Image 1 (cartoon, rainbow, N blue to C red):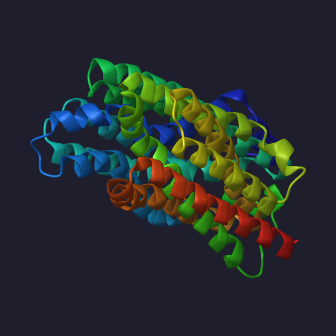
Image 2 (image 1 turned 30 degrees about the horizontal axis):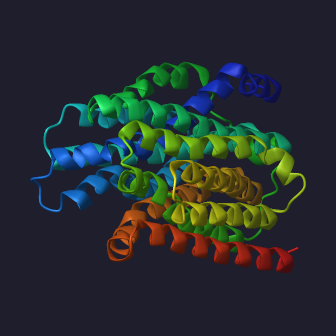
Length: 393
C-alpha cells in the first residue's frame, strides 16, 4: 500500500467513525452500571460487606485494565494493532453483558475482570491507531474528538443506564452487547498501520533519550485525576440519595450531565491548545474541577450539584486529550504502544484506588466532606501545574 493510498484510507469517515465508536466502549466499562449500584446492593444485602463488594463491581475492571495495559502496549508494538483490537471488542461484549444473567456476586466480578482486560486492549490500541494515522494538528484535533465522543457516549449510556436500572438493576449490563456491532467495522474497515516507516511517514523525530520526565508527570496526573474523578460515578448516586432521595434515573442524568460538559471542552481542545501550553491546560483543568467539587461538597439542592458537575466535567474534558497529545508528540511510533499502555495503567489504577480511599473517608466524615477534600487536592494540583508551567517554558 502506498503512503498516499494509506493516508486516503485513514482519512475516510468510516475509519474515523470506527475509531470513535471503539473508543466510546471504554467509558461504558464502569460508569454505565453506576445507577444500578443502590439496587444491586439491596439485592445482595445478605452478602457480607455488600456495600464494598457492590462498589467493587463498578471499579474491578479498572484494576485489570491497569494490569492488562502493561502487556498490551508491548504486544501491539511487536505484533500490530488490529488483531488485538478485534479480539478484545468481542470479549468486551460477552463479558460485559454477563452481569445480566449471572446470579452470584463472585461470578459477576469474574465477568468484570474479563471486561477490564478487554478494555485495556481497546483503549490502548484505539489511541495508538489514532496516533499512527494522524500527525501534529490533525492528531490533536482527533484526540480531542476521541475524548469528546467518549463524553457524549457517557451521556447516552449513563442516561440509558439510569432508565434501565429503574426497570431492573440487571438491565444496564445488556448495553455492553453493542460492542458486537462494532466488531465487523474493526475487522473490515481499519487498516493496519505500516509501522516500519512510521517515523518517516508521520514526521516524528525519535528522541535519543526516552522522555521519562514527560511520561512520569503525565502518569501522575492520570493517576491522581482519576482518583478524584471517580468520586462521581462511585459515590454520587449514594450522595444524591442521601441528600434528595434521588432515584437511579436522576443519578444517571446527573453523571451524564458532567460527561456532557466534558465532551464540550474536549471538542474545543485543539483551539485551546493553540493558545496554552500543556501545563497551562492542566492548570485550567484542575482549577475548574476543584471549583466543581467544592460546589458539590457544599450543595443544598440538586440544581447546585448539577452546576458543580458541569464545572468538574469541563475540566475533566481537557485532561484526556492533553495527556494523549503530550505523550504521542514526545515519543516515536516504535514506543507508542508501550507509553500509551503506561498511561492506560495509570488512568485506570486511579479509578480502582478511588473507592478504596474514598469509602473510609466518606464513612468517617461524610460524602460532603469527601468532595470538599477532593476539591482542596485539585487546588493543590492546579498550583503545582502552574508552577511547573512557569519553570518548563
